[in-house]
Image (cartoon, rainbow, N blue to C red; front, top):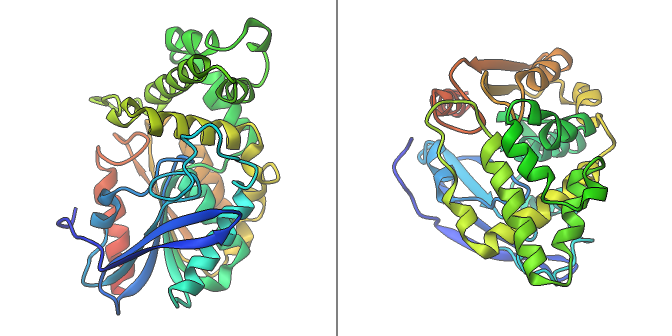
Length: 315
């Protein structure tokens, strides 16, 4: 990765609904504009994202989606209303940020949930997108959500049983993300904290089959843990606030936009068939499978992602 850099500008953008979105710009102010679309929902944009870009070639824009990171109010506060936190709101925030920064068109770079949000933005505003570099691609279909919350119990049976048993017995055969969302809204803080811990423990289990994976230390932070669990269950239980299968059905809207999709063969959170289906309907995209890769960077994934971003920097 490129050496660490600091932002040359940053701020809080008032996007309405009482929400203020944190943004920052790094690299070359006259370089090729690129937007980082982080995962989660609720992960926030960490400094590591800056290091994926050649700072001499790119004007790198990072932002924290509503309710997470440095944006306010933070979903880690159980009193924060999530009704104004939907995919439609996030897409409007991205467009407002583009206008605020005076950018005409930009490259989108995202992973996991961020790949879904980037695809949704590109399908809505194709005239504003120069290219897409996505990894650990997901399309946020109901089938994928069922896969993550239930079917992967066949791969991690003991861990999934603990995850399932974290909700009341009457809810265990239903929508587990909705059941956890209800627990995370419980008036009892102990019930909320226990639910957040169970949800995040399951997240730590299923993200990768790649060797050497270690649990994420971010879940030790109670504010992050609560905000992340609330946002993920909020989006999962509402199908990502998108018509089911729309990202795959509407992939033809991306015609003329070049893309690179980097996918780990050992990614069980977002199996490779999702990215493969996208490229079938989006001929301008190239799929690169990393045989030792899981969900996220490492194991050869980072090198492929950086190579794709360098490729577009030279274009």
